Length: 127
Image (tube, rainbow, N blue to C red; front, side, top):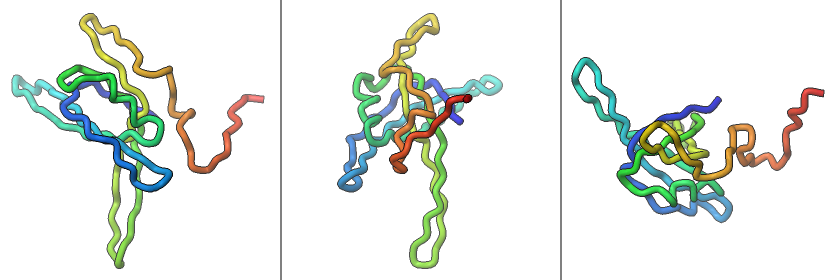
């Protein structure tokens, strides 16, 4: 399942090479909501992985963007302690312009086209 959110790009971090074959890049958007006349600002940190780390390159801090993402959860255990980690994995970004239209930063990928570590390709044909 994929999600989307629109907000202002606050910060873009450098790409981090986590291992020889895995890299990530984080960025933050600000989402403002008016609740009964009171503006609430939320800061949401996303990560982009592998070939998606470049999706944030063409956007400037302060620009309004739409981010498409998946929610990923991981169970992590070390020294007998268990921790749960949630990541918001961005896979597409669009620039939001006045009037509600947008321009794509990348071709129209969807969640079923994500890079998988399994190496196989799913057959999703209906026959």
